[in-house]
Amino acid sequence: MKKHKAWKGRFKKETSPLMEKFNSSIKFDQRLYREDIEGSIAYAEALKKANVINQKERNLIINGLNEIKEEFDKGRFIISTTDEDIHMAVERRLIEKIGSSGKKLHTGRSRNDQVATDTRLFIKKAGQDVISDLAKLQEIIIKISEIEIKTIVPGYTHLKQAQPVLLSHYFMSLFWAVERDKERLKNCIKRTGVLPLGSGALSGTSFEIDRKLLSELLDFNAISENSIDAVSDRDFIVEFISACGIIMIHLSRYAEDFIIWSSDEFGYIEIDDAFATGSSMLPQKKNPDSLELIRGKTARVLGNLLSVMTLLKGLPLTYCKDLQEDKEPLFDTVDTLSICVKIFTGVLNTLKINHSRIESGFNEYMIASDLSDYLVKKGMPFRKSHEVIAKLIRYADEKNIPLSEISIEKYKKFSELFKKDIYEVINIKKSVESKKTSGSTSTKSVKKQIASAKRRLKI
Ligand code: ARG
Image 1 (cartoon, rainbow, N blue to C red):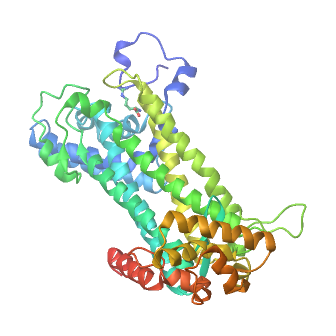
Image 2: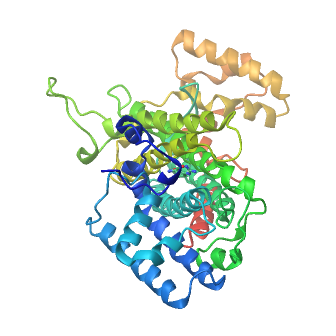
């Protein structure tokens, strides 16, 4: 028996089964069923307004579509072998259900403007979900920053202890990165909210489709200005995956820090049992796999970005079937990012801080720049003070004497400007509190920062 295909009229022979399998996207794009049906319901309204269908047909179509949605929702929708993609599947089922009125739904529409619309709707929703997951992460960041407001940790450059900072200051650095991530997503969602529907295959349609009505019904903020661009454009997918890639890079960098901090050598933190795993052979092991997987999955998302960008490069206008390959990287990105943000939030929320280990690892030389500032405040040019302190540190290091145990006479050998008050500067806590600029690590500044963060979150 000849299989029924919507486009079969042009063909004499059957499609090869191998080609059918190759061409089909229903396995993955059925994920767009809500968006596809929502788009079709709006389109039925526009067809009614254009007098392509009457009120009765409109009702039949919309009821039919709602029933199909329910079938999908309940996992009862049966995919037929002829269902190439989600668009064909929904239309086929509609015709089965309501007969000839269903055959009118695709008037003036193409899968080209349809798929672009569905994907935009999907990203608008997925983007909002990511934003709310990120907001939850930010709340946890604030929570632990408030709890750890008294904890000092080494701040690192080149993974070498550089200057002491409040642990809260460190955690809050992630808050602002995440804040930018949310902004980036909001901007991306705004640009994604441009409606392609009504562009037909590529040139528009001869039916009076009210695109403004479609845009209102589907909650878009604008209508595309050019039908060729509307069906060819996948920038919004690139932008979205790119925004997600940046989020993953952020998570991955902090994950890397926490992996180092949880190592036996550092021991600054302990990852909760709920987010760690063991070894099949080594009974003592508790590994930070949650964080390692976040770091690893970042590669996937960045790979997805590269896949879509490579897909688009050199692709002739307007629609080509290559574009069907945009969906799996997109869906994979959403799934990967969503679980990574949740896992990262969980790790942070249950993190144990080992205060004594942190303190016992302090390298006194972290206050070297405070000593140099001391000399500057007594009148020495900075470049000179840098050299003096470098020599002092070399001396202390060679002789293996703590800075606080070097005599004042010896200090004076390095510079006459040293007075007895130098010993007050050799103090990690004072170093932190001495920072005066806004956005710095002093307790006062960090408290201000947390207050500003709370205002952003409206908490
Ligand atoms: N499944 C296709 C996709 O995802 C839908 C558009 C097909 N359009 C066409 N003219 N063949 O890109």
